[in-house]
Length: 388
Ligand code: SF4
Image 1 (spheres, rainbow, N blue to C red):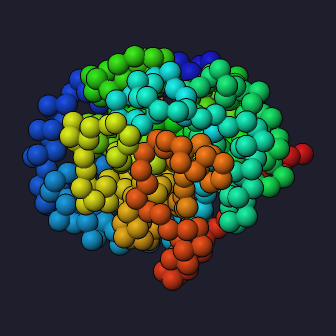
Image 2: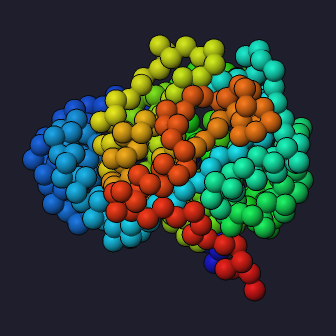
């Protein structure tokens, strides 16, 4: 039966290619978007929210729907309240290395950039984690560049085993792995992985990932499948916003999420909304940067189509915008983040991956949530819940 099912579900590469969402149908989609009318936007808003239909999402992200953002916000707020209550999970990133073998044009850790690189030993990483734990966090995201020589599976397993007593939720945002390696991480108590496709447009992908293992678009595309096959409880996906047309990225991202939800129904799929930020030696003039209103429309449109998806917003975004977004669909947010290895203690001045925009402390973020009638949640999961 399992094999029969595999044959009936197209893989994500085929799905994107068939719909022209790998960049091959860019002009057709742009034309369709430009032809959508305000009457269609009103119709889309009159439908029952919370389920995914590609044509409906297309309308919700169209220029014509920009005049209906307030209505979308009200529906998204109600939907999030129904499904997630008033809670917002708080997490902190812990960067363990900024050595990298890739040359991603937009990234401060790009291997061509010259600066003193840092790798944290297990002891140094634990010292960082102690500081994060003292701030109240129980949800920790381990982050690393593609540094397979040092940040090995064994390193992560050992670190996870030492972090488990202090953190109820561990996840990673690191280089891509195979399903069996993800399974090993899961067995060690790491239950979530976030990995962005960066851009679903093949041509744009090639332009911004010229060399290194990450230059392989198709391999990158199956990362989330590997997470599902490895049994990860949470699969985080996203596009790096600013590389290509945000509207087409949203459609591709939605198709990807829809596919993953059908294939790996035991895992929870969540969206992140990383916008390009200033980074060391990166020229931002070459990117398609988004306005705040674009990001808001994208987030609302996805919430209106995916009622149960987790939605994460990081400290890349400015305080005023994060304060608004928490009411509109966000379920998880970072606070007090450092994007440099050792940034919380031993190497405060090391080079970060990008500049953050919201530098408020975790306590200030918690106070902001409470002032809006929301409940900051430092812990909402414990792997012990599933242990037999
Ligand atoms: S985005 Fe990741 S893989 Fe690319 S250069 Fe930066 S750290 Fe390395």
